[in-house]
Image 1 (cartoon, rainbow, N blue to C red):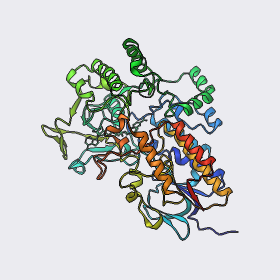
Image 2 (tube, rainbow, N blue to C red):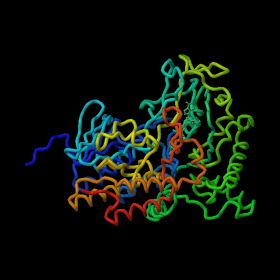
Image 3 (cartoon, rainbow, N blue to C red):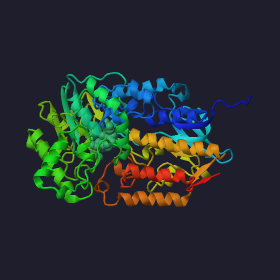
Image 4 (cartoon, rainbow, N blue to C red):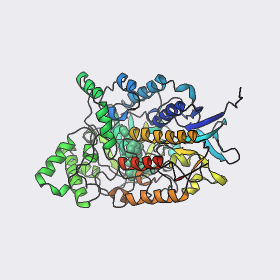
Length: 536
Ligand code: NAP
C-alpha cells in the first residue's frame, strides 16, 4: 500500500465558509484527498465571524441557502424571511454535519503562506502556528469581506473599556443596558448594529463619516403556509435566481425612469420602498445606476423618506448622503434605523464636521468634545476583495508575490485564475460576479470542480492561465465598469479603504456585468476545452 505523508493532500481549500464547505463536498465526489484549513474554531466563515448584534441576512433566506441538495432543501426551514446570524450559523453547522464535512477540516489554522514549488508541482502551505501542508491543487475560499480593518485613529489600543470590531465579536453575549456605547461606522454592518443596540442601550453615540442610503428590510416570520409554498417553489425560485442580473429574486425593471409619467414613477418607488428586500435597489428602473438624472430621482425619493422618518430635520440632513447617489454604494437594509435617531438616548455625530482626533483611555476626543464610553464598537469594515489575499504570503512561479502582481489592481482570468499561479483557483475572488453570493459560489465551485474533473480525465496535472486570456478578461471587466455611477464613488466595492496603506486609489475589483453573461463566458471556456488555460 502506498505510504503518504499525512500532510500531503490532493487539494487544500483555505476557508470553511459557504464556498469552502461546498468545494469540499464536490471535490470528495471526485475521489480527491482534500483538507480544508480554517482559521476559526467552527465552520461558517462570514457567519462564524460576524456575530455582532443585529447581524442577519438581507437577501431572502430561502434564496441564500445551498441549492445543490434536495434533501437539504426539504429538511431545513428558515424561520424568518431574513434569518438572523445565529440561525444561519446553525444552518451551516447542520450542512457540515449532514454531509460529514468536519472530518476533512482542520480548525484553528490560519494560513500564513502559500508557495508554489516548481520542482514538485505542488503548493506548500504554512499555517501560522507552524504546520505545513502540501497539495497539487490550492483553492482559496477566503471571501471578499473577511479581512476586518480597525480605523487608523491614534490611541485605539489605549481605550480601557471594552472595544470590538464587528467581525471579531466575542462568542459570549455583550449587554448594553445602562452602558455608554459608541459605534464608529455606518455601512451595512453599522446600520444593523446601531438599530439593535439602540433597543437596550443606556446611551448610544454614532460617529458617522459618510451616511449611506438605507431602505427598509421588511422582515417577518415565515408562517406554515408560506413555508410550504417556499419549499414547493424552490425549483422556480432557483431558476429565477439563475436568470436575474445579480442572482437576487429582484432584477431591474426594463423601463427607463423617465419613460413613465411622474405619478407612475412615484407610485413605483413607493411600491418598491414598501416591498421586502433589495427590490428598491436591484428591481428599480433599469437606468438608476447609469443615468445621473434617473439616479437623482430615486435619491430624491429616498431623501424625502428619511426626512419623514427622522423628527429632527438637522439630524435628517446629516443622514442624507450628499456625495453619492442612491445605490451607488451597497444599500444597507434596515429596520427602524432612522427611527433610532428619534430616541433621546441616541446621538449622531458627523465626524466630517468634528473629526475624531484620538481614542482616549476613557472614550474618544473629537475636534470639539471629549466623550466617555463603556464600549466602543468598530463597524469600520474590511480590506475588501483583495485584502484577504494580501494577508497571505502567496507566491507563484519564480517566487512572484501575488501582492506585487496585483499592486495596480487584480488581474485574473474569469476571477478564478491568476497567471503564474498554477493550480490555484479562487472562489469569489476579484473579477467574479458577486451579487447573491451563495448563488455565485455554487456556480464558481461547480466550474472549478468541472475543470479539475477534466484534468483528471485527461491525465493533466497543471493548469495555468494564458497571459493573453488574463489581459482580455481584465480589459473586459474594466470595460463593463465604464459608465457605472458606482465606479465614481469611494467604497469597498471600488477597492477603497482609508485604513489600509495603498488602498486610496479606486480600482475595478468586481465583475459588473450580469451573472448570466458571466456564466455564459465560463461555460464557453469549459465547452471549448479550456483553451485559455495552459494545461500540462
Ligand atoms: P463598510 O460598508 O465598508 O462600512 C464601513 C464604515 O466604517 C463606513 O461607514 C466608513 O465610513 C466607516 N469608517 C471606516 N474607517 C473609518 C474611520 N477611520 N473613521 C471613521 N469611520 C470609518 O463595511 P461594512 O458595514 O462592514 O459592510 C461591508 C459589506 O459587508 C457590506 O457592504 C455588505 O456587502 C456586507 N454586509 C452584508 C450584510 C448582510 O448581508 N446582511 C450585513 C453587513 C455587511 P466611510 O463610508 O466614510 O468610509
